[in-house]
Image 1 (cartoon, rainbow, N blue to C red):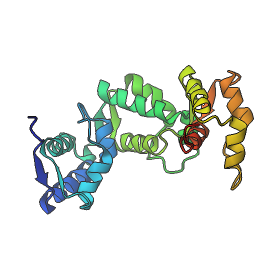
Image 2: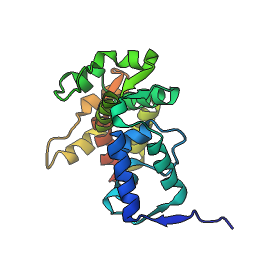
Image 3: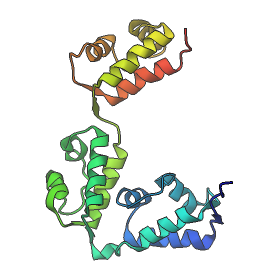
Amino acid sequence: MRKKPEKVKITQEIIAELKAERTRTGMSAAALLRGGKNVPEKLNSTMINAWMSGKTGSAQSAILDYVVKTWKALPNRDEVYIEMTDDVRESLNTAFKKTGLSLKRLFDTRTDHPKDFNWRNFHSILARYPKLNMDHYKYIIDVLEANEEQGYEVISDQLCMTIRSEIRRTGVTIPHILRRAGRNEPPLVTQTTVYNWLNGKVKRADRKEVKYLLDLYKNIPDK
């Protein structure tokens, strides 16, 4: 019989320790996991924040130990730099790709850049910077996290197959489902746009529009 993971109570002392490490390092839970090695499969920043807010009263001992040790291994915020290891580079690059946005759309119109931050150096940071200012790293992570899956995606064969499969499953055509959705408010995507995806006339699609269409079909039962 498989042994259940050991759990520990999230005490006020543990909460204080976690908050102290967050303050000492200047590293949010999201940024901590972005740069972490061997992150446990079930661990995410929402879980850590729930511990610190008191919303969650217990945690798996091994997962809590991982978070504490990872935070404690980081330098003080006033030590300024984080080493650009291969894992850190990979996590930043992956997070950037997930946004589907260009660097210009991510950073150019923002007015909250840290001192001396230049977003045009992003690819140089990934390629050859040995260290990165901690405030700049945290800022990049926060911007990428806030814009995850907000941009565009390549229209793959799999996406087209999924849309066609939903049409067959429900028996509802693109014009019909958009007319139905438009009874209360204008639909987020037009039938011309969807047909352009399916016919290969465009190569990229707005992720919000794709999600909108697929969510419409999810709410329709099989024919």
